[in-house]
Amino acid sequence: MTRALVPEDLARMHPGRAIVRAAIATALGGYSRSVMPEQVIRSRWSGDSEAMLVLRAASSPASTTNTAALTQTTKTFLTALKPVSAGVDLLNRGIMLDFNGAASITLPALTVPAIDFVGEGLPIPAVAGTSSAGPSLIPHKIGVITSLTSEMLASSQAEELTRMVLLDACGPAIDKVLLSAGAAASDRPAGILNGITGLTPTAAGGEAALIGDVKALASAVAPVAGNSPIVLVGSPDVTAGLRLWLRQAPQWPILTSNSLAAKTLIAIAVSALVSAVEGGPQIDASREAEFQSDSAPASDGSLGTPRYSVFQKDSVALRLLWPITWCLRSPQAVAWLSPVTW
Image (cartoon, rainbow, N blue to C red; front, side, top):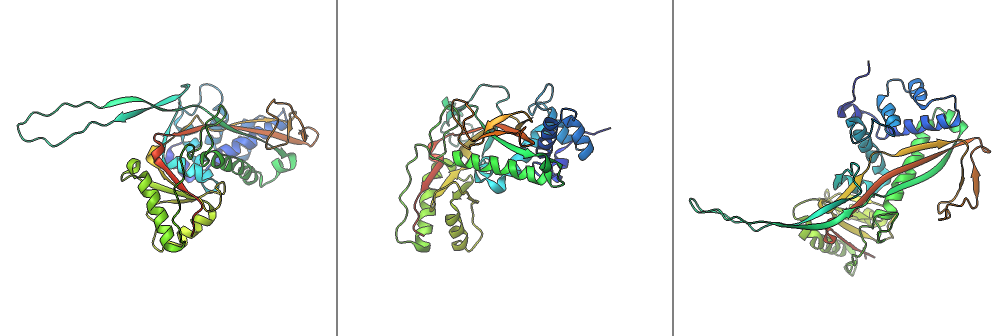
């Protein structure tokens, strides 16, 4: 009899392992019609009930909203992305919500009423705060198509190789949009720098400029952050400099992203960063598919060139779709500057 997974079980497992195994099982099922993905899980990873849950998540009654183990699976996949994505690490530190079937989530903008001390025996004043519609979370998704050869699927290293493919595809995709100044569009949320003018970097360089820049960023987000955490995200050259100059352990987390232009540093009050992840990644496989092997395929859906046939190359096409989105509760939650002089 298989017992239900508890969070302690999932914490001991490799982050993202269940989703990777489900991807391999789906790919093998797509490669051979005589093989069911569930059979692959049972034969290769006997007892991995979490991977089996991921396979069943696409059909009723299992889903991440009504199955506690699947909710934890989504969180472990996010954890697995942290080493390759500063953006995912950042989202994990903010407020995470769930659409739970809703078309959108509107965040309230609250005005907190002023309160004061009251003397003994004196009447307590009755005050009311006001609320209005704030920013909205609109569902979006990231997606990628890749192919796995039959030799790769049969390899003893299939799990690690597939894990690298999934993580390398998802992590940078999130950073590229989240840490940008791009406006919201029908296919993506706005970057957290959208509409926010960069601060002027401190001149003259050296440690004094570094300290001046960090102080300027902290002051800019202070009205929103208060005493809550501030996270610094920078290009690799900037974060290396921060860690070298800050001789003591830094007070705030420092994250690195290759998607940022050189000499760029961002400060974020994570209490105002809200995201929503609708379940875990959806994984589909096909041995008959053809697709345009291009990171920027034709927008009209035509195959174009180069055209890739998985049947001809004895491969399996693996498609990953992952609903994920975010927004800022206040534009004052983010400040940035570039190019730094240190």
